[in-house]
Picture 1: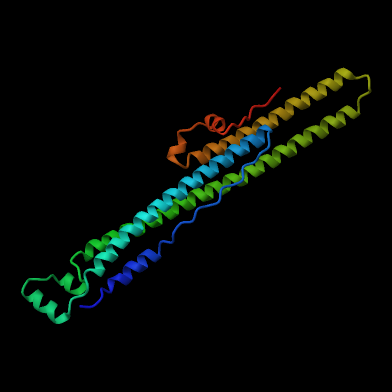
Picture 2: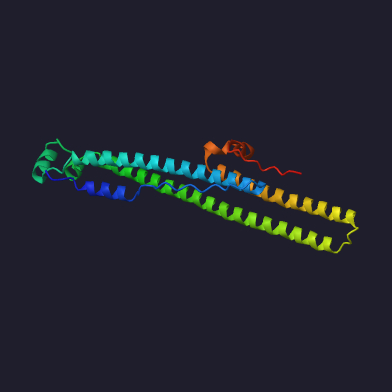
Length: 231
């Protein structure tokens, strides 16, 4: 008897599957403006989906490891028979050729399961990579939404300031109209930024079937966030 050389194959199969690492959660924004509250909701969604993906990834990795180790244990208990003894046993019909060559008649079963394990592993890593890319894109877009929203509001304020400076001190009605129009424009810009950010939150929640059933308003309420704009 000699150690089963297929154990090396098992070890290589397992080495192709590095243990997934937990991802540190994002720090949640603490601002109280509607866009800051909406951004906080997005960050909570990112953290929830990332944690869920890591948990599922680790669970799948553990299952694949256990299945691989079961085969390793099986091979360790089935060493390669001595050539002379196996030839005699084959001639007598007491041993299969597979057992003589590989120490086990389950060689084909093992290869089939390893193919499934490797495909499972590849699919899991592909799925995680897809989610991480979607998250990265959403965070980048959220930053752009907030930046453009801030720029638009500053543009509105500057426009109002220029218009007011052209007025006489006695033009109170015109001043009031400029201010009211500016407030409406600011509200419109803020509403658009919040809506776009909430759409990103929806996109992230949809990455996990357990979270896809939760509406964005419900998600924000769960985390005590308020994106409504005051008059």
